Length: 331
Ligand code: UT7
Image 1 (cartoon, rainbow, N blue to C red):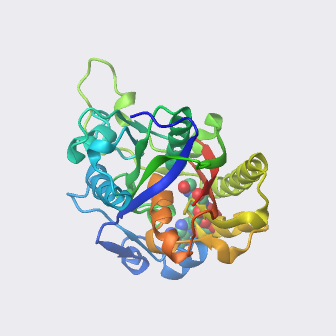
Image 2: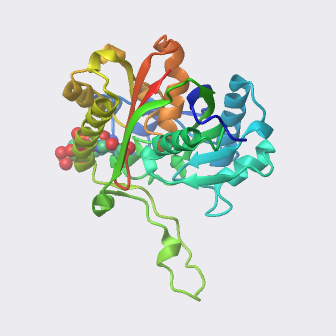
Image 3: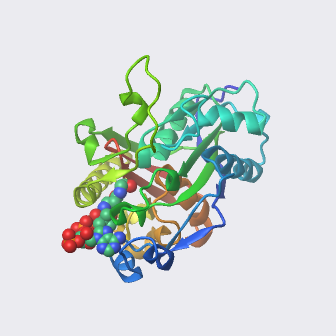
């Protein structure tokens, strides 16, 4: 259904699904040579959620999407577009977006996945904003869903302590008179992609030969280098977005950044000279859920940060690709 061309994006509803199984740092001490003290001081993560066999990326996305639709007071049949950001799709195709659409009963609604790793949700929000501004689309479901426990090497202490599973969803609506995203910035540096990657073992297989047995590849990360690039790229992107929007730091009510490591978040707010108490943090509860981090944070931040309509929220992310993005959303 088309929207009016003077309409802007409004965050109409949010939802989450977080698996019930909690894996604590103490549990990890039994798996690899690590300690609660090391994980807490180096990352700020206390625990993370681990999906059960039934909790696929699709399943978690569907639960989050239904909650977001209920909160937005909309039905699946009201949707004009379904976007899903994930690096852990249940299949290469059909896309996770098509699978979620089928379970929601959103017959005929266009649906596709987008992949920008931890920046995926913000890339999706920027796309949704473009469709709404163009006046072509009214109600959009945007989901970030990840089952990272399936692609983590549980013998590698450098990575296995960092990641968790979960999904977050938002329904955005075109509303007349709304300004939508005040500004955004996004980018990618493919030449540095090897610093954080997850190989597709099938892609390397020989054509016309049977697939070779063996386990799928796992996340590989040059942690220290990614840390430095994340802080610089997110700070630079946030500054560009504020400049484009003509918004000063003191006008920002809350910063919601990708939740990879508390030290990255601290370094980011210090670089931006932003008051730490206005920065939303939930990395201690869930660890890094890639594309699901920002929608889960959006769901929780409204109540925890007491956000009011009109508040300006700075969203910023960085991840594999390498990719980054930032945007200012009016609550
Ligand atoms: O979503 C975007 C992608 N991800 C990120 O943004 C994550 C970016 N990177 C990071 O968060 C940090 O670099 C890490 C948390 C991954 C690592 O922290 P670090 O301060 O950079 O530690 P490090 O890699 O320099 O390792 C320091 C030491 C090493 O021992 P040696 O070589 O100094 O003897 C590691 O082997 O800590 C050791 N180490 C551990 N020790 C206990 C690494 N992982 C662990 C562990 N437990 N889990």
